[in-house]
Image (cartoon, rainbow over all chains, first blue to last red; front, side, top):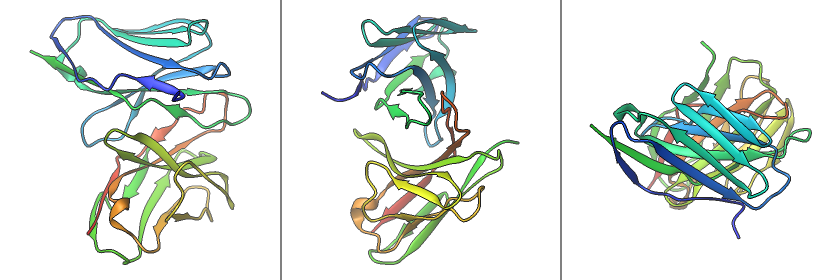
Length: 112
Length: 113
């Protein structure tokens, strides 16, 4: 079983839709959970990160972590064409220094 | 502006011709790393460095070398490139902390013929 699983998509939605992006993981030691956004031909950029379980909101974006289920989600409200990108989840154990483990990314396409 | 700068952004080369991809960061980050990104395989770590003169292998180090002589620079060296090293390469850096939030460069697309 891969350490972090993420549906590659593409996920196509109309403008204004609520988008749900998800990752599952197997390593119960993961403590930090991040979402990166990657536009075509660009480097990944950090969107949000959370520590342990719970929710975090930033504008139209909400990150949710359920450690008991080993499941994390990113919700995008009122999606815009400019949200079209690949979204990568990433996780780390957070003890001392630990390497980030990335999902393979989900491509999101928001049509006007 | 805080950033990670990679050069060249695009490169076409031939098998066996040594090349170096440079990476520089201006954020005084201790940690630097190289990744390659391939369709269907995602981001895979090649090498990383926790500090000057400290480097270690990632998941796919074969065929690559790195050095960290200065804190801000972390070049990736392909001594004898082969076609299977055709990929999109990213340099990234961070402070060493619990979250280890990486800042990525814009990427270097390498084609080896």
